[in-house]
Amino acid sequence: MKFVLKFDLKCEVHVTISFIFAIQNFMVMILKKYILLVLSILMLGTVLEAQQDPWTKSQLITPDALAQKLKSTGKDVPVILNFGVERNIKNAIEIGLVSSPKVAEKFKADAAKMDKKKETVIYCGCCTMENCPNVRNSFNKLKELGFTNIKVLNIPTDLNVDWIEKGYPMKQ
Image 1 (tube, helix red, strand yellow):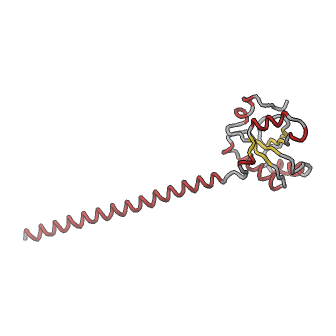
Image 2 (image 1 turned 90 degrees about the vertical axis):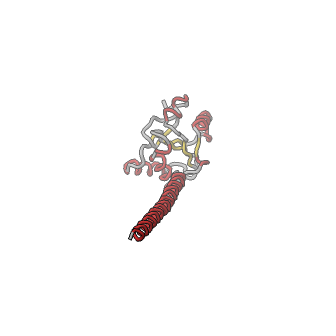
Image 3 (image 1 turned 30 degrees about the vertical axis):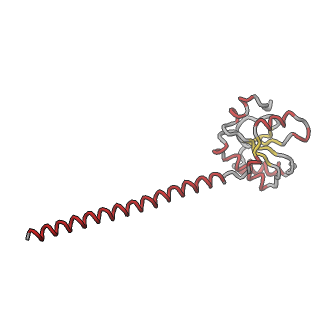
């Protein structure tokens, strides 16, 4: 009888240890799949974020480059459109937020009179470029209206830091 009890005990211990190893292997497998899923989601998010901007890098213009163009006269000076709520830089036409239906309709009417092939620089300047919904909406609206030479003023921080504090010209 003692022999049987020892045998049962060894068998039970062996089964228990095997069960623990099976659970451990299962959990490791689940954890690997979870990590792979999380990494895939992060990579997809990075790709989607990179595609978030409707413009290409060649359609960005630096504040310094625009300030230089503002020093010239005549045909080299682009049309500058302010689609934000910030102050106007030199020569800028204040449009406002095209996300507002009233502003969008007025701009559509005004845009019909504009040269759609002329270099047109747009900006908002309310916040960082990556977080600004205004400049993306405005860029897309200009594309819809047939503008072919759109540049986006690359304001990484905001208008104050990237334009005004650098002493670039403002509308008087």
